[in-house]
Image 1 (cartoon, rainbow, N blue to C red):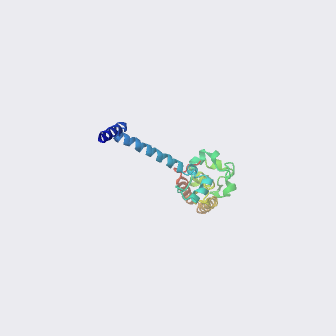
Image 2: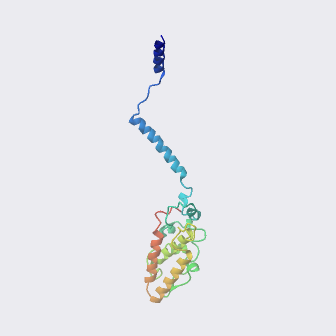
Image 3: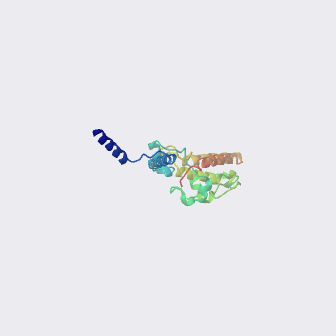
Length: 207
């Protein structure tokens, strides 16, 4: 009698149990997708807030403090500054005379960029006695970059040259070209600034 009751209890228990669901490839895929989605959400949430503004002055000053900067330097091509003069840093005005910043220097009897503003000089494209070695566009671009992305920032990842270095390099080249009577020194400097201005143009996200 007791054996018969035990059998009835076991039979009832087996009827009350939920059937097991076999693990299928489709079920495994759903679980895996859910885990991957969670990982993406966590990764996105953990990205530093300054990542998209890392070439701003504040970004340059804070990036090194976090130890997570992922860029080597900052700079924009002269062509970008040429067409985006409204984005120049506030301490560099397109309306400032070139000679106010770089001084008056002669080349073959002419004062370089006399009575022309920085905004006008950066628009020049093509070499001539008035623009030897096509230096104008590139030296102004370098000067704007030096102000926009300070070399002296805490991250040490700004533009290659400081504003003072850009001016001094131009003065030295202008003197050398005037003394030699040819554009070689200014042309060499143009090539140097052109390379520096374009070095990080593809990875600089501001402006």
